[in-house]
Amino acid sequence: MTQPTPAPVRICPACDGFASAAITLGGRDRAGHRRTITAHCRTCHGTGTLPPLRTLIHAAAHAVFPRR
Image (tube, rainbow, N blue to C red):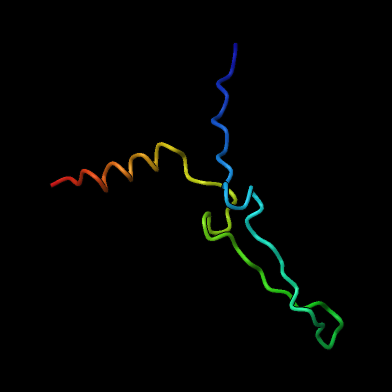
């Protein structure tokens, strides 16, 4: 019997799925480790994926046609 295939994951177009990056500050601390900060994608908030299209359409419909 065939199995249903899951819906493909929607990869964030802004970061192409690489949602977080460690950026070096250029120096080292006293122990010799590089000082870094973590930067997250603003579009997907560091997840690398977007919500399902159905969720986006539902939210847009409620924004345009609010229930009374």
